Length: 151
Image (cartoon, rainbow, N blue to C red):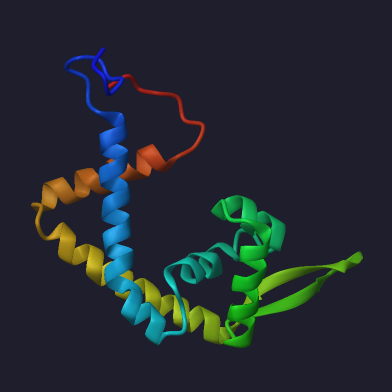
């Protein structure tokens, strides 16, 4: 094994992860001015997106790997901008469910267009077959609890 922890001839898994992270960060950095114009930051964009599947603040904090006070602050920002609302949870009046408002859904739609346009520009560096392969591979790798195919 080399000092990087990988076997000779094996791909550098940590290097791949670092490159993916760099890609995501560069797309988010480039999208930040447009998202800001919508009243969103990259983090609030993804929190607003996650609300559909994780409508409770504690779930959002776990899902996004953020401290609960940070999520609370972001929720308040989104509520002030009219992007999120709260609904009482039936059967437990102490608990509430977050819901995207019409304005929130529209901001998400526009934000997705922005992020897509930036990524599409990056993907133009690849040929069509490579883009399709990249899409297929990333989807497969992003799945949880899938048995390895070995190749």
